[in-house]
Length: 314
Ligand code: CDV
Image (cartoon, rainbow, N blue to C red; front, side, top):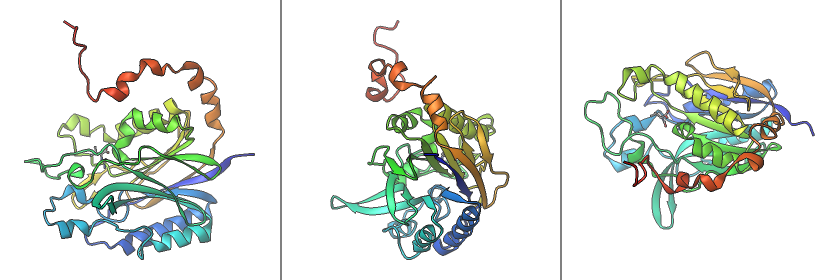
């Protein structure tokens, strides 16, 4: 079986505070049509693609905060995406803020779903590496309050069989943590998709912020190469409510080479034909996990959270 087909990244330019879910969905539908016209079978939308990136604001009123979250999926606003997926025979990955009652408790997650070509949800991931703070930081022009508004994902790093392959999901900051990539690769993921909102004025260090695009691409290229997976990274980008978000959406091969990259800071579809069997070359050589990995030596990775010297170090 030849497993070669076109996939797409549907980068979105800024979403303003006033924009409705329908506004966003209409933009996504246009990009879905454009991708399908290029023969694409799978399209990746950004993190929190249905709203402005609200964790930059301090929102004290719970009722107001709740308006940024989806309580069901699909819902009336997003249903057209699911219908279009079925009509055009194209799967998609969508990020959104999820409010759900689980175990009798109301819970809030930064979530991404996979939808297959029949327009059905077939995979869900809730972001594990939440950046930023749970309390507003004095002196910052923009807050980053993901730790306040979301709880850590509780679904692990699932891999979903779909489109003759196995797809894993990461969300934004997850791309900087090799552990998530490796957990996906150990479940034989061949394609990793990721949406992001990455401000280039976030760290408080000018020289670090100046490397925001470089570090994004470095993370995607190293994640793909070190784990022998294709990846599709999709930005929400441009000047959004005064916050400058990087673009550089990219489709990256298991070789670590970028095969398609966005050029604007606006809505933009990029496409690439990917050969899923390419990953095999890497998994049979440098990254033949069965021959070369030594998990018995990696125990600290799951036992220890932070860097500490050993107790007998002098
Ligand atoms: N949405 C994100 O997770 N953004 C982070 C920023 C805050 C560093 C990122 O890793 O891109």
